[in-house]
Length: 131
Image (cartoon, rainbow, N blue to C red; front, side, top):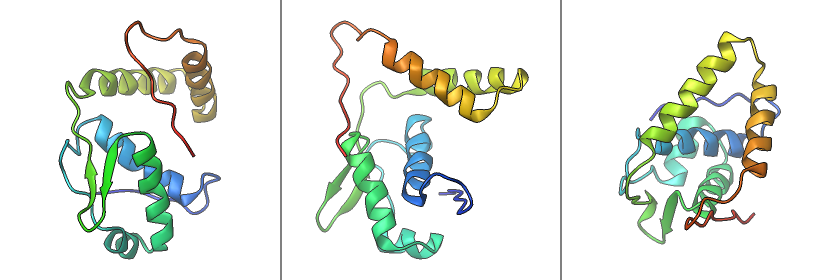
């Protein structure tokens, strides 16, 4: 598993880690039922504090992307249908933004606003992450 972290970015390291894992889950590089490395092992390989990794894992658990089990570790949540269409749309959106020289912050602001203003899909409940 290849995850890039940059200590010079404004985003906290736990959020960068959670973001990298989230992207891997959504685009299918990590599949349902797959075990994530133990927090201590991942922390050592990324030269992070174990609490940073645990905080990222808890964020993903709250988003229902992974399950945490005492003694068995973190496992990618099994999802029916996957997110391949969503991953493709995201990559298309990023490509289009780059073609128009749109800065990352502006793209994220646009996506955030669109997400907040979009009506709820009928029959689908969107989980509200807890922090």
